[in-house]
Image (cartoon, one colour):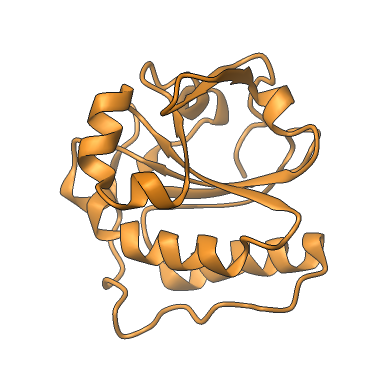
Length: 163
């Protein structure tokens, strides 16, 4: 299990609005897909993450790509997904470091108190499915997406989170 991240970490949106993690968690839990825009592996998971976010857009959970870059790098990497979903920037990887992540991409589900309710590192459909089960339970939401689909990549370990 990962460490609870510091709630003082600041995460900025693509439009330049900066809030602490505590502020992002005031109303909703956070389901974040943390990606490294300098690796192919994080790119492989973008369509899958987008599909998950769309399932939960009406639920009481905030879904976001957390991108380890500045706004320009995030926009370039995410392409159309940058306009379709919330994007939070972690250019210095403070959020990644605070969680104790070792591999990216990663799926993390945080409660409003920033405790980690579920996490998966790299891409493994069964592990991501376990995190989704926790989201479903916490939100009392019953729209569970299918994982994997034929369009999802095969399992992979990801790349070093801090390397």
